[in-house]
Length: 399
Image (cartoon, rainbow, N blue to C red; front, side, top):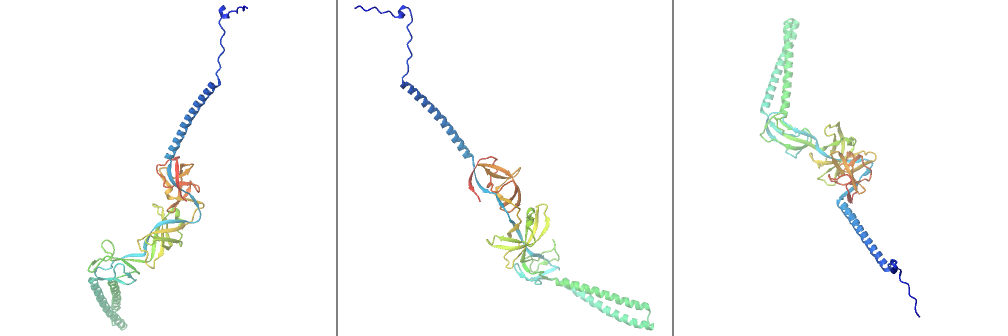
């Protein structure tokens, strides 16, 4: 059987063949492409995250290294009396240089340094032959004046009897009475001269004017002695009464309320560690020194055993009435800047420089009038180079 002839394709007749349909990718290539895209995204994300973490770590490390290590303490609110501590100057209750009252040569001395003497004791004797001769002459003049006075008295009495018989004139009687009065005056003058020379001769013995201790002897046997005091005279002895002492302090003007007469003061000496002495405020100068702005205060201290010596250094502790709700800080927290006093306060890990006004000085602590609050965190011994806002790292916390 003969099959019919098939028709020729259309392109044989001069027409273009039809386009082939696009090939679709299978599931495996698509999964592969998605995996590559995800891998690239993860790599990019990790790269960005790594750089961000490194930058953050660098910044943290830089900030940490830039932070200043500081020790801190805290401001405190206190009430009641406050203690004022000041250096004191110890002086003898009575202290005097001993000079000679007559010229001459030192015959002998009886007391050396450290000797305890009583009022009226003879410290030394001076040889003054010229003065002794003057006294002898004055006594002779007094004897002559007394003889003349006796004669004038006799003549005046006789003439008073003769005047009754008119044996003598009234003028002669008046002369005799005048001579009697003149004789009395001469005797009185000579007696005064003798007493004066006797007192001067008594000064040949140098006496202790009060009970005390000889702290200096500045003469020796045979030394030429010049009477009086000053550049031309030489101090013979120095005498101090130390059974009771005076301690002087210069109290700051803001603490003058502590200078209450009769108040108790406590004293400490370096040579007696842990031991305290008690004194009483006796008086003050009632005037502020315009230069130092301080008040001079005297404290009297009994010293029966001579344990405290004049010239010693003492630490005096006084009680001063405290201001209401006073705030105190250690003195080593202050910064002295050209713009004024500052305190470095730690806030949020940074240093803030706060201006403050200081009230009373208690020695190791200071009263702050304004600028701080209780329990503020203060930097101890802040460096001069510290700046406001500087990062700090607290290493130690004080009480």
